[in-house]
Image (cartoon, rainbow over all chains, first blue to last red; front, top):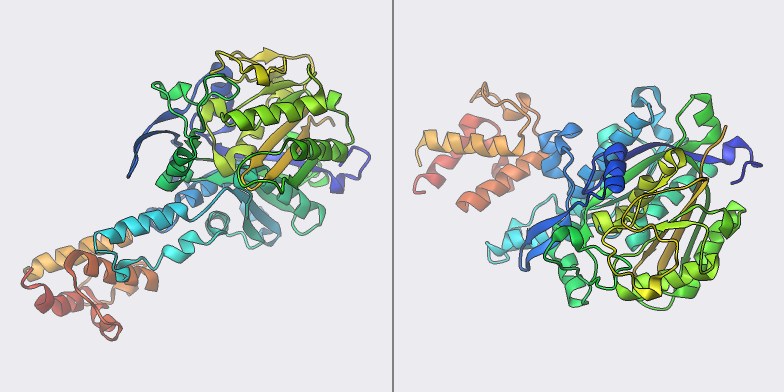
Length: 416
Length: 83
């Protein structure tokens, strides 16, 4: 994946469709990231009470009928919205495309949790008599549901599936799309990640039991990676779908090119269910750099995974320091400080929010950073205010997940 | 419930199941599925709503009697008269 390769095996991003707690398209999202606008709010959650969460505000009826909304899932709606928006952004018209050659690859942290909880809650009023259990349950909870709903909505007959990769899912969805294009399995990929986790009390309760659910009197201050006073994760929903295609195809149709995916790495910690592993993160970052054929000094922006847990933030900073040195050339930022942790969507959303840097040469900051954790002091964090940089050629995006799944994606500014 | 109330209730359930459809001109003596888009899963939703709202069990062998609005009212009448 270097310029020396033929254009048929170079893969570029030509469309972005997204919904985040602080924006329903790339332009809005980017503006929020540059103006310090958070998207975290209070949410009343059954069994727990008030929690803090990032909720999206897109109009689901834009691309779905009421019946489709009744039958489908929130993750499906998010995926459908993002996929349609991405195609429109890429100036692609489905009626002129061979829909058997389009693949849908969406990363997820989990799926089915929300629907199962809802169904159990529903039959509670019938004393748990399962004859009241919905016949829609199974198609709603199958793991491919969000991607499958996209194919139903768009009449896409190529492959579709989700990739369960915990909080690395967004990156992994993009990587899968790239690989299928390189293998010539499809001609166009709708790839990224989605999350509906804010609908599940269990996700919140699980983090709470773990001592890792963020709280703060001011919801917008709750997500504070790398800050000394952080106290955990803010759970968010969201989605981001990229249109990904071969450079040769993109050039042929005169597409706008957001960037070229030049490197990626995926590996496993094999060490713990929850706690991260510095050595494996280092290895994963190096895998991506090697695949891109570049050195750490070439990277201009590092979007960190940092979720606002002490262990997670510190281990990631140690890994970055090991690869990039104590004072990296690359600016580091963090998107979760704005929108919380969008789980399966996080990797894709966080990459998307940084893509405009190729054009405007501005790095969005990490907000809510009042007292930097000295163990996260790499000297290159962009704190609270955006930073103008001279060169923005390479963005490196970290996304790590439970059970020790690590993913790194490197995108290069495209030059004709 | 009166026949009118039963008819209104069935219409409300159908409206909930297929919210995009216009039910204002639904003919009582013509199969519902010939007039609006209503698939077999939607029909199961109607059966489920009757169970949840009124505790009425419609055995599969009786599904045909719910094919039309008039048929539904006739079938449900004796089962809902004391509700």
